[in-house]
Image 1 (cartoon, rainbow, N blue to C red):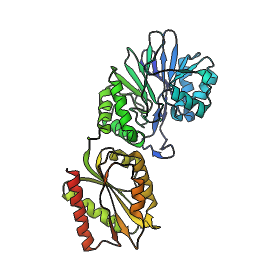
Image 2 (cartoon, helix red, strand yellow; image 1 turned 135 degrees about the vertical axis):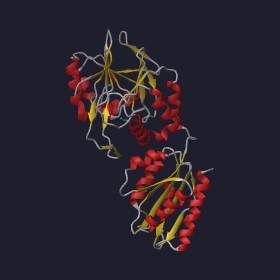
Image 3 (tube, rainbow, N blue to C red; image 1 turned 180 degrees about the vertical axis):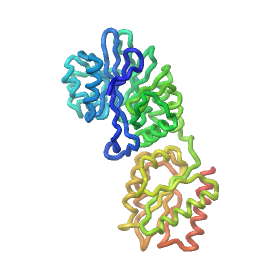
Image 4 (tube, rainbow, N blue to C red; image 1 turned 60 degrees about the vertical axis):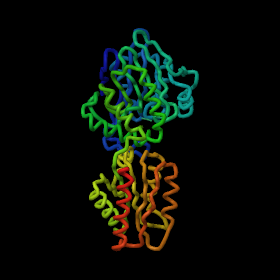
Amino acid sequence: MIPKEIRKDIFWVGSIHWERRLFDELIPLPDGTSYNAYFVKGENANALIDTVDPEKSYELFQHFAVLEVEKLDYIVINHAEQDHSGTLPDLVEMYPEATVVTNKKCAGLLETHHHIPGSRIKIIEDREKLDLGGKVLEFILTPWVHWPETMSTYLHNENILFSCDFFGSHMATSSLWVEEEFKVLEDAKRYYAEIMMPFRTHIQKNLNALADFEIDVIAPSHGPLWQDPSIIMDAYCRWTDEDEIEKHVLIPYVSMHDSTRYMVELLVDALMIRGIKVTPYDLTKSDLGEIAMHAVDASAIIVGTPTVLAGPHPSVVHAVYVIGALRPKTKYMGIIGSFGWGGKTVDILAELLKNVKAEILEPLLIKGFPTEDDVEKIEEFADLIRDKVME
Ligand code: FEO
């Protein structure tokens, strides 16, 4: 791994984690990821902006060896999560002269998670500047993307925004810069959906705060760098806008003995006939991250479940729990499924969805395998969904 020069005396010194397939033991990473760290050399001082996941610390040190970094003045930490701060304990030992620069909340988390003493940390305020000599950093508090302490660092004159998770994408690529815009946007949307979607009101405020800055490059801490920041910033504006809804129905479901599957197939066909975009996801085979990504702007989510142990299938509970926690801007939610003799499916799922501000449609649960009457009910349900989605 070698450093990549972004501009004169500004280097990418990160790591590409090609083979990683799971983050937080929860989030699927179909395209791997990267941990982007940046090294900025001023006339009087230098600074490292963020670090890398501890599993890849050796790659950051390889970069430092190539760049002959014998003395490190500042380590800017935009975010305390371990994939960006995990090499910090080693760095403060290796470079006893280095000052850690971050905001007050982040300093607290660095002490909590890494036992970094407060004496090593310089606390900065929102919009405070740090002059490295010919290179001036400005710190912008951008909280809740996706922890409370997250911030961004802006490099004046070069107009580079080091945004950490904000605008990032879990994507391993040898390209420093965004090349396949569509693909990077898809991974960025997936990433936004998985960790930032519940905080979209905060994110809108952060987007407004960034309007004060002329930004030529966005250098996030995951995925390639944006040379045309308007693409990803416009996408974030759309994703966080409550009114930017696609007429799209998602149907995550599980079926044990084909009754629920038949209901889902009938509903999918009925919606297609009515001209509504619809996507079913068999939860035993689907990537939950993909469902989250589509939930960013889907107008309706209809959950399909059989009844097992007197309630919804556990895989459906898992998916609905995640949807409830992500609080998408989806306008309508519904439950369909089959039961043998009873259960509390609706009560259990409704409790998990109580934080989603969607209208909950009347559930459609049928006994056993659908009859002709049930088929008619599914047609009526499709009419209802069409009317709601097309409103
Ligand atoms: Fe990439 Fe929130 O860490």
